Image (tube, rainbow, N blue to C red):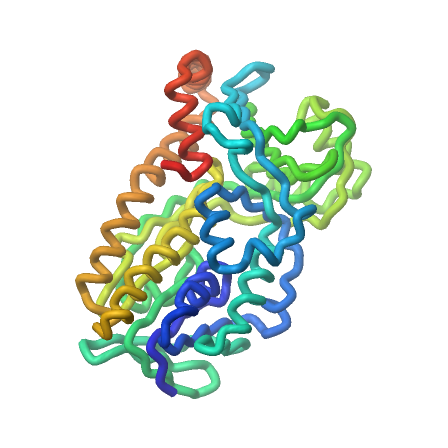
Length: 390
């Protein structure tokens, strides 16, 4: 089978990249190891995605945003960073970003479903589900994939969007910097007595990191980061005990909290590929950059990578030029590194500092938050980052 582009991974990044090529005459194959039903109707996985205004615009352009029910989209108005037991911290208000809101909150499974629903309608996109890529290679002439069902795929360009643990990245000999933080995140949705006023929290408490992403009504997506053994004890607790412990962990600042969803745990690992491209090969999404969630930029950067690569390829296709030309891939790599590397480094440093419970680190954190709270230009800079304006 021959295609112009073969995409490994049918997650949001891979499907959005395929959809971004809808106006071209390029034939696109998406290979996904999960079954058709699993990606056509994804189950709730606990993850709520904070979307920037840039991401919203890209999703609107692709037709995804229109498929998500308005009541499932929650505005993120303000953001608050807390340290230890202090009630006051750093607050970034929507006015600092000159927008009606800093961003939007949408469940990951709804984004995945919308991405699939758009891609499945495109005549130039073929979806192969329930099969794995067992081998891949590229040459000056093109790329080749071997699938688990024995079929062989020839293409001009291979694009990997197969998660931060990318098999394709490793097969192509591309190394990556991997930061394993030795902890796990447990995510779930909880109701609470007190309103959140659509303010997102990032609370670096001593011995734990808590995040609250405000959903519509008195509901929030809760993220608890702890050592793996603690998550193993916490996650399966009976609801009454779980509710009591979460209420206590949040210092009863939201009153009584009640579990209203399933619970899910994920290892806390960040990844940055040394290269994003090779001969007739490119990485997008988490396969290129898998962010620590503290700055909530993971999916936003993945969507940005898909959009950037698709624009470069579209330009080549309009010229009837080689879509996998080395200059085009190098331009994509340079642009995406500029967009991601400073943020990745800063996020890693932030995560290390704010999860260090030594006394000097606590004092530095208090000082940084106090200074930031008094500097409007700093707040405007953070707000621009959160909204995707910078």
